[in-house]
Image (cartoon, rainbow, N blue to C red; front, side):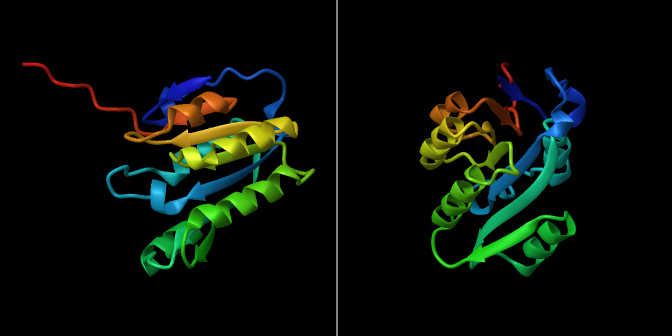
Amino acid sequence: MRQTLSSFKDYLPIKKGNSKDKNVGLLIDGPNMLRREFDLDLDLVKDILGEYGNIRIVKVFLNQYASDKLIEAITNEGFSPIVVAGETDVHMAVEAYELIHNPNIDIIALMTRDVDFFPLINIAKENGKETIVLGAEPGFSTALKNSADSAITLNPPKPNKSI
């Protein structure tokens, strides 16, 4: 299921069964997704994932260059900022692997555009987890979108104006 949306009002999920019985673990690739050009609303992300189940874990991976203001904003949303030296992808992958093997988490949600997480999506599915990727354009990996059970583009491309 692929969806593109700009506000929660545009989002009308078609869910089977009681999604509230499921627990969601969300990992956010901060340097890749929390960029000015995307202008993403973390409240919208919470609303969207709340339709899939109970959000139990939210970790935002940031590099050592993250501003104090960004860290504070993430904390104010109720998310856990994880500041790492070097590549955030490695730390996020390790955390995702731990969530895959956590019996209390039913849904693995990754907020990234990075194809490097493609193998993790497949491992999660092999281990019986439902998978969601949330991303933004440009650069949202087609392979990543196609491998997940659900793919959501948070910032739909703006229509071209023709003269």
